[in-house]
Amino acid sequence: DGTTETTTTNNTSSGNDDDDDGSSHPTSTAASSSTSTVKRVEENEKPKRANTVAPSPSHISSGAQAPSFTSSAFTATDLKSVHPADLPGKLTKKKGYVKLLTTLGPINVELHCDMVPKACENFLELCEKGYYKDTKFHRSIKNFMVQGGDPEGTGRGGSSIWDRPFKDEIRPNLKHEGRGILSMANSGPHSNKSQFFITYKSAPWLDGKHTVFGKVVGGIETLRLIENVATDSSDCPSHPISLLSCDVFQNPFRHLEEEYAEERKKEEEIQQKAKNVYKEEDRGAWYSNPAPSPLKSNKSGIGKYMAANIIPATTTTNKKRKADEIGAVHPSVPPNKRDDEGGQLIL
Image (cartoon, rainbow, N blue to C red; front, top):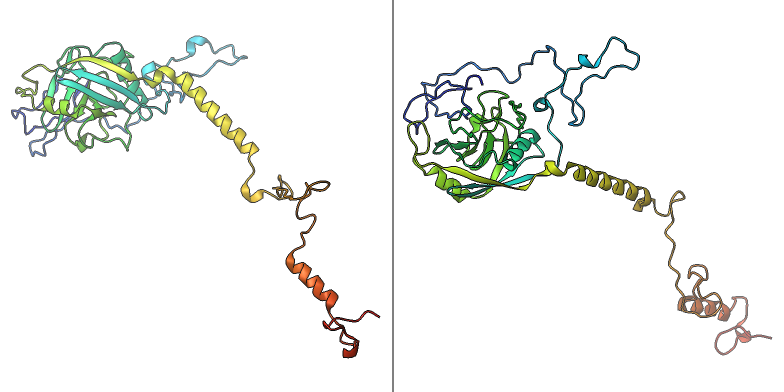
């Protein structure tokens, strides 16, 4: 598997350094001057380009070059197949949920399938296959983490669903912050298999080195009981703590086609709705449907449905103004020619 990333002395251990045996485990840091560091491959180092094919962004296509219809020199044997472990993870927008039943109680975890699909798909399928059944938590360090997922119970075993290690999925917004963070154990960059660990508290020195793919959403009390179990000099629990079963509540990778169909349907509905709806500020313009005035009528018979603005209503003010105009006396009419009410005489 390769060497461990770092080997350090832990405050809670017996003081012996971890053996450089290629086992998969997160590194404990206890700011000590006696820290010895093993040189490791940089994560940003570019891989060699010897007989490799760039992975495809789609899980449907392998990304390999296809032969031309007119080519006679290029044959199917020239194609380089890409191993499934090296392909990008399947795309989903949903979370996964699993209940881990231990000898000390249940632990419910939420998986970030929408952000780290490769690690989540591996963990969910191993749970469904019963791979973790009756496995032991072989390593526990108080105020740090508990580790499991190795059928051999030694910290050196385990395998992924692709029968080979898969790459890290480091996300800047997924960190080892707080209690109950679920992360992949490894023996160096891109060496993920089946082993995992759950933190007892924040471990920021593991950020960028281990793939965080979930968190505990139920069973914090069970995690506290596991932390309080005494351990020996090799950080192995004195009383065996086993993972009895894994119950998968939701595996979004099993229903990808239905999820894609729902997304397409929603997009079509949004597009259709956008075509049929006019903007409120455009209503009434020459290029859109005008907003007609509602017809109001208190009459009966012919013309009762005509709009009120077509036949102007006669108001009391209009009647009074018309009466004043009729009864007004022209200034040229002498006073003796006016009637008693001040109106103009009709001769």
